[in-house]
Image 1 (cartoon, rainbow, N blue to C red):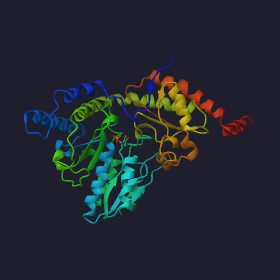
Image 2: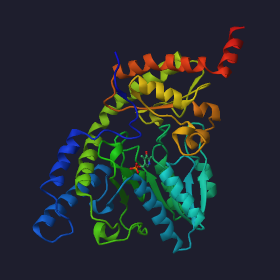
Image 3: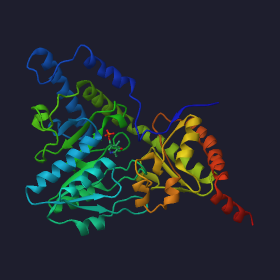
Image 4: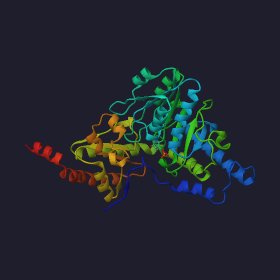
Length: 395
Ligand SMILES: *Cc1c(COP(=O)(O)O)cnc(C)c1O
């Protein structure tokens, strides 16, 4: 029987019923502007500060350290550009990041390079772990910022942020981490990580698209990205998106409450990885195993196939997932993350990312395991390259 299996939670998640219910009053009767001094405004202001406090509590932060933004990409841009511009005022014009960051962070750094900043892109090992040795060699007292993501969105690698932050601080640099994929999947505490800034996004944790937040540690000064009125203590202009902010607070609390379920998610992840690797010849796991990997991330490279064709055939069977192949992006190159961990072009083009959640069942996994191998075989049967390999294997 045909099912619908959503295995693309790293791309976005459905908005949960609880989030919708929490948001609803702020789309209807509680429509005030939190900057207004009258009762309608004060009602909104109280709710805004309540949401800020609840989100701060989820991260081990203080309410004053949370700033609302329009999305994870804005948070990444603000942290990176804001720290760079603030650093430049003190003569610091160097930024260190990694080769496997999300494009929001990577392209913010590229934009700064065009403005005269120097950017070092740290390499990663074959599992995707950032090289601390390269960091130590690259960092100087001219380094304004070190920006490394907490968990990778493609291959699920969890980075040694506490160790990296320590090195950044020893050299007087600020430390930023993009925690968009980590929230709700692993515990995230700003104090334990020792970071100065941390980005999160609503739509990866069952809140709507178009809401994010940036944690900025007390005492850390970064330049504004969006100038405007006095909102967000004059650091981020724009009337606060009240319904979405309330939704984000509810989503954050639910994400934390769900953490114990991640043990089960990791079991299904490992079941999928082991079964796919054993059922499909010429397949390789991309990224690490075990606790070094996000509990919901599976990324496997298949030789002799094109990711897009595989995706379309899986979609036809009701399975939603994604690929690191080229056509899924605007460029002709396959995933920069897969290339950075040393995956050859051919295998990067044939990569499959399944990002599962606490709602993914064993039956869902079995459905994927039933549908995927014949699809791969069907595509390989059309590949002249595979034909040759198959012939040789028979001899
Ligand atoms: C999705 C994502 C972003 C961007 O967040 P948006 O809210 O979609 O702008 C940034 N970083 C990572 C790691 C992501 O997965």
